[in-house]
Amino acid sequence: VEKFFSAQPHPFIAEMQNPSKYTLMGYVTEHYHFLRQWVKSCAFIIAKSDSYDVQIYEMRNISEEYFGQGKERPHIDLLLRMGESLGLPRDRVLTSYPLPATRRGINFWNRVCRDRHWLLGLVSMHSLELIADRNVKKYGASFSYFDPKILDGDATPETKDFLRAGYEADVYHSSDALNLVEKYAEELKMERDVQSYFLLSEDKFSDYLNARLERGRLYEKEL
Image (cartoon, rainbow, N blue to C red; front, side, top):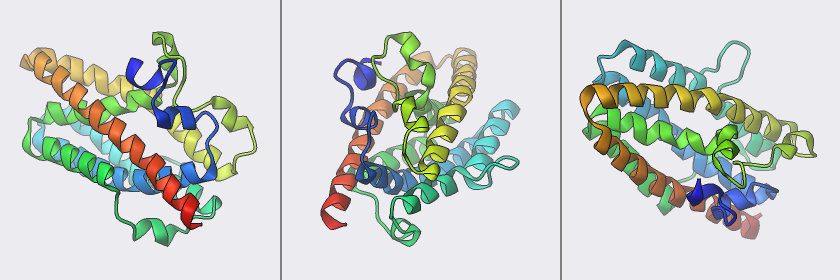
């Protein structure tokens, strides 16, 4: 809470209280690369864990990212549609390369999920969903991930669709994942390792959020 949502919040969180279109464009591009790694990370966890509840949880995550649920669009498509509504062509995102901070984060999460115990991959990836959990103010946060007033404001419909989907999904995603982490950390006696990787992952995520801002500033100069 202190790192991201205090009275002096993370710069990206501060910007998301009233984001410019360029900030949102930067969000789209860097998050696209993050989501591609996210799906790979989920797949590593499925392959390395023999726990049915963990496998089901991660398969649901992959499905929501790439295929959607019921009538809901895939999360990655909602992201790209938001970019298009702001004037950012989909092809430009798809052919882009992640900025260095995003690349460092992706490499870290890839290594953890590929090379370390699956539980460390689980906590490293899914603890990140706490950042978008709308219940964060219950724990002393001064800000939430974005100002919910955006959903009732003049943002593009596609922007509202993307933000709303993540806002609603991460409430149960993060709690489900943390319940699994707590269960298996105790069962496998890995509490200290889990805490260490939680903190390492939050540091990488902080840098990655800065990359979203950096990309937004680049777009502001270019477009």
